[in-house]
Structures are given as structure tokens and as C-alpha cells.
Image (cartoon, rainbow, N blue to C red; front, side):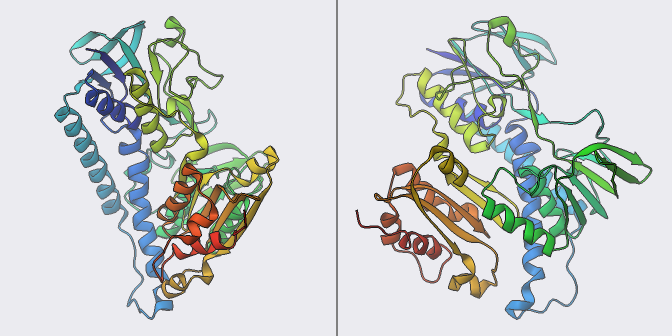
Length: 456
């Protein structure tokens, strides 16, 4: 019987635990903050629940186009919204704990560290407990990065983990950072009715994303009243009574009621005992792993945000599953970044899979590309959808789909057929020939594929 010790109860940890139990291993999972980790308790589940409320208000705000008159302007009760957010997060965490216990996973509430190869020490309220294991999985996640010149106080200067303590919609929220997290929260609070200023150190919002998608989102943001400050780097954030002042490196200042810091993440790898056993990390503290989640030390695996490999809950979960399959001798497919689909939950959403336009150019691949605006879709017209598109990339001559971008409402759902095609190395013709419902948003995916038709 193999005994696996897992440190961390987020998606990487709990999915690994379930796979290991199904394969017959004994599992001890050491968790500090609550099952589900930051994904469930402070990050993905809470933020997307908040965004769901914002999206509803955005849709209601455009109802006049569909012939629906709202007698008064709808507003969100942020205290109620955040109470619901936290209830759902806790309920999801309890569901995960119940599932793990039903599967026979031993759960130890405490902080774990590696004491020696094959030995984990858990610091609990009752004292230290030594767990001997044949293999160890590290799935400790990450936490928000802050700056010495911008210290959160949990009231006016906030990280994304602290916003759910707000009882009222900020009068003027300054979001520092225009990556995925910054863009999502800026979009959400803009939809909730707050005045929002987005401070971006780069020349555009979402600088790492598809340029057509990023430009569209920035145009939507500004059209909806958001102030986007490009090429503006934060120097400091200070509180002045009930106001906050963001000072930029060029001397300009921005004053608001609240500031949300979206400066990236730091892996939770300190005090894990990595140096003592020789587990390699990079300069940022992320654990180095290969495509089957192995670290530099035999018998020690790692999964999730602590590895810095595409910091997505879905990737963390897959890394954990792969690690246990590899450890326990099951069939395993190494993680392929090019098959990972991801979504940015702005309004509209941005979903991507496969090679990006930049990666295609860097690799010198010869592809055919097409971009089809959603505004031409009959279902979009019926629903009053004006912003969005489907963009596909196919290898020239053979038609194999290598990447795609969908921007629009529920893009996270529309990307799936493109993801299947990229994963299975299907051609544009395969997607074009599959039936779609008329009228439907998915019809635009098929139509974009038809525009890529090539005789092979």
C-alpha cells in the first residue's frame, strides 16, 4: 500500500487526493486554510460569484434595447452580495471536505513542511505530528503580492482577498494592475456602479492577451465610463482619512475612495523545508516541475500556483491528477500547455486555447486566420450583443486548428469546441461540418471555421 502525503487542499491537492484514493493509495492531506484553497475561499469562486452579480446588472442596464423598461435603476446591495459570495465559498469548501472524507482521505488541519525525504511534519493546534509517506505532493498555492510602498489595510487599500469585507460599493475604486485579476475586478465594480480608474503600467489593458481581444475590452471599458490610464506605473499608495492617494512614478496622483492592488502573486513556498531536501525553485520562489509534476527530488511532486505553471485552477487540478497517475503507475498524458483553455471573466469574457497570435509569429508558423464579429450572429442580434468575435488559427494547407480566441458573453462556454479541436488536432473542416443549433452563438464558431476551409 502506497502512502501519499499532500500539503495543501486547493484544486491541485484535493484532486490528487481523490485520484490517489481511487488507485488504492492511503492519503493524508494537510490543509491550513480550508478545503478548496484560495480558489474556493478567496479567489476564483468568490470573484466569479461577484462578477455574476455585476454581469446581471450590466445586462439589465441594456434591457431597453430589447423592449424592456425598468421602472427604476437597479442597484446592488454589496453587503448582501458579499455575504452570498462568502456563503457559497464556505459551502463549496464543505462539499469538497465531505467528498474527501467519503473517499477515505485523512485530513489533518495544520501547516505542513517537509522534514526529510519521505517525512512530513504537520503543525496542528494539538502540537506537531509526523507523517511518514512514500511520496509527497506540494500544492500550497500562492498569495497576493504587495509593495512596501502600497501596504493594504483591509479597509481602503485592499488585495483581491479582502474586497469581500466591503459593505458598500466604493465611490471611486482605483485598480492598480491591468493583468487578468485587475481587469476582472475593474470590470466587475464598473458593472456594480462604482467609478473605476484602472492604472496600467503597460500601453494597454491585458498586455499578455490577444491584441484584438485586449483592444476590444479596453474600448468597452472606456465606453462604459471607466478611466484607463495606460503607461502609468504606481510609485506608492497612501491613505488619507477616508480617501486613498495613488502616486505614479511620473509624479501624477490619482485620488479615490478605495484602492485594489492587483500586482501578481507570490508562491507559498517559504518554510516548506524545500532547501533541506534539495527541491529546486526559481528566482521567484516557484517550485520547478516537469510535465508530469515531478520536482528535482525523486518522490516529491508539486502542483498548482506554487509551481507558476499557468496559474489556473483547472491546470492545478490536472497537475495533481497527473502527479498521482505517474506515481501510482496509471496511464498518464504529460501536461501540454498548448491544450489548456483559459478565460478572463471581464464583461465581455475572453476565452483562449492553443497557440496565440504572438506565439505563432515567434515560431514562424504559416497559418490561416479569420476573425468573425459576433455582431453578425443572429442570436447576438436578438440578445442585443454588439461586442465580441471568434478568431481561429489553422495550419495553412492542412487546416489543423492550432489556436482560437472567443470574446463575448459566456465565452468560457463557447471556447469548448475550439478546445476539443485543438486537443484532438482536428481541422477547421471538422468544426465547420458539425451541426450547430440555429440560432445560437456557437454558430459563429462553425461559421468562422467555414471561412478557413481549404482543400487538402
